[in-house]
Length: 455
Image 1: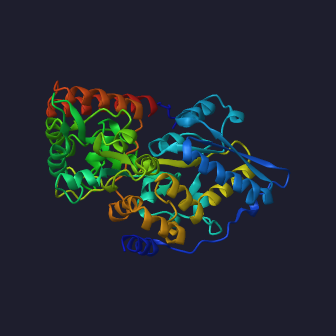
Image 2: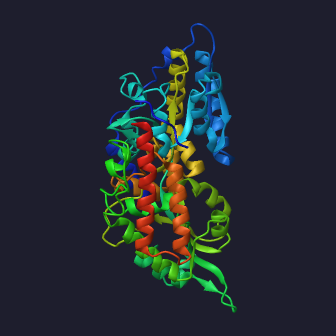
Image 3: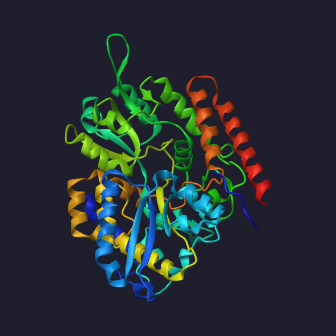
């Protein structure tokens, strides 16, 4: 089959992590990665900038000077932005192995696209190798599920985040609230109370800010129950998705109904201009952001107010689902050199050491992907001083592993359809029922076209 590509609390959490650790860290079996015939260069494409990029660069430099130097391996770190995955696919389609990476950082949603490439390495062979220091048990259960297709891990968790509610606790207290809203009924009440207007009626501070595009639509439907995947086939984890199910299971209607009420408050800012900066400047009292923005927001707020985080609000008070994980995973490619593949795995093992997982997490807000990272003294001390960073970990550990972002094989089309439809909804041009009908119809049409072209 050939497929066509389409474009006290910290201590408690430490104990929870300890319970899921299957084994102590082992020494790497990377001796087999040495280039006996000469030096090996591992090309690593990534998308990180700012402090995150600097931290990755520092870790790779450390690898090159120590572990890599011992084995005659050098990593060539190349910034690709978010075009890396598309460039991998382009290189594959033109059989241009000389302009392709050995490791690529790609969004979780693109894992199926990578599996369609014959040169993509089956990482489960490394993960299940008894000599490997990185195994499925290295990762929390939710991350294992996030990166799995047909029950087998198909990519390596690396820079993964979870959506959180960032809030100005000082503003909430002034409005009479001693905690963040836990569901949309409360979010609507809190938003009304937190919104401020001037003498002309213009909003000077919004209660909450977040856009509604593909990601948010999926997050708030999946978050309702562990068996809501937005699409069929468990969101593409047991077979390619063929249709939208959120229209028939009631989750899309529940979210849209609550969203309509939130819009009516006048204190919900739909447009995402500069959400981190606006939140830090006090222009929005609450904002929904991935945990990966924690480091940036903490720096922008710089102690000017009491910045805290909370679990993503549920749509309904009785919801039992969880916020899905997002972010990026590592895919490995065999460009015709098995020694280079082994060298690339050695790099992965180094990056996923507990101390490196903690280091990357503390700078960024990405979740620590190695379960042992939370036990490190430096991580425990960091969490004590920055409790905002603990919330995402707790949300992941307490949640249902089934609640994940789907593998929608027509990602770009889904993004376009949902974004355009939701703008019309926000402007009052479509009803809840019309939104559901349009999204289900148009996305299913794109899926039908994809399957007709590929099966």
